[in-house]
Length: 375
Ligand code: B12
Ligand code: SF4
Image 1 (cartoon, rainbow, N blue to C red):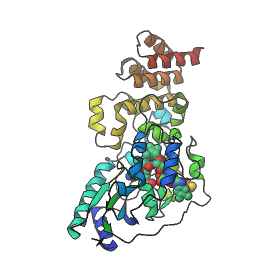
Image 2: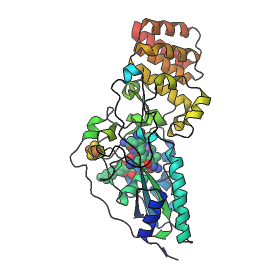
Image 3: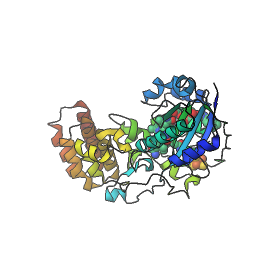
Image 4: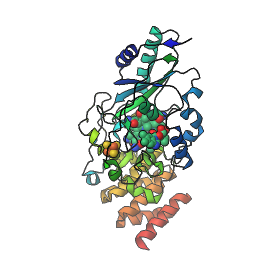
């Protein structure tokens, strides 16, 4: 039996639940399913094998919700536009991407989704609602594009003229029939600021990003050792990257969108992140997006940023890490960072640690660092 719903009523319920916009698309195969599949075939997803494993449902929401009729696309703005800190090298401050400043957006948005779903079911008792944010096997941006929530920027983010790209997406797949909204035109025009601004060349100008070149990928998703060739390009970033959004003209005046408020810790003191222990990491970051990278990932990224600072003040913290961190990955990156800074104190500490180190990946880093400096 067909269950029709009023778009105005659903939009009102979405607003009441705390969403800034609510748009509708017809549930069917995702419009850019083929582009997604060829992206996977090229290996542009790097080690994010979960995207491959779930590709069948990602391209077709009806495999997930067989009686789905409509994809409801919801948006929640966050406070964007972190300014680079020009003195980060002197202050030993790292940088966290704006989307991760506040409390974990998954928790905040899931609570809003629950209210939205309960309100829908109260009005339409036969309604079913599959709700997800970020972690579900759904091509969220494709649905945002299909519903006219925005256009695909050349940086691959969905942009709209009211919010720029500083917003999260959430999706509800429902058996309700709701008239679909139309597309919005592409408004990037001839602008290429994000392509020019991305320091690693991760964007190809055709709405495609190669995760193997993306700072956000390396600092959030990649586990284990970061290849040497990549480390320098991470600069001060310890979690995510906002460069391709910071430079976008559509984001210029939309700095403090209403929604999730920023935490005060967007430029953390790098030595604090390097020496944080498991208990403290859990206490400070369990309910934030940073939890995804785990203590090892964040301490590793802090070591890389300290190496990139070139600042001798970082040496005592790195010496401590190379000699006492429980993780070989962290010790390896701390060794590299000491080599980058390259003061006598740093190189002496590397030589002395080499005598007691047993992990091959750390030994390799120390030997490489000493060879690069001393031949
Ligand atoms: C994996 C992932 C990542 C990966 C890969 C990113 C990527 N571009 O694919 C990494 C870790 C790098 C990442 C980084 C970020 N992410 Co992310 N990420 C995801 C996730 C989980 C899946 C994305 C995905 O399916 N990628 C596959 C590729 C192929 O998809 P795509 O890039 O969107 O590509 C589409 C276009 O290329 C289009 N297309 C292809 N050719 C053409 C041609 C034309 C003409 C057109 C119009 C379109 C088009 O078709 C493709 C398929 O839909 C989604 C959540 C979700 N479940 O969807 C969040 C999500 C996309 N991420 C998000 C955010 C906020 C970020 C960051 C800003 C975080 C940060 N500050 O570090 C960065 C942005 C980096 C960037 N420029 O993309 C938001 C984006 C919100 C928005 N306004 O767009 C999402 C939707 C999470 C959420 N629920 O809010 N992310
Ligand atoms: S910087 Fe320019 S090209 Fe890139 S997403 Fe923004 S408007 Fe589009």
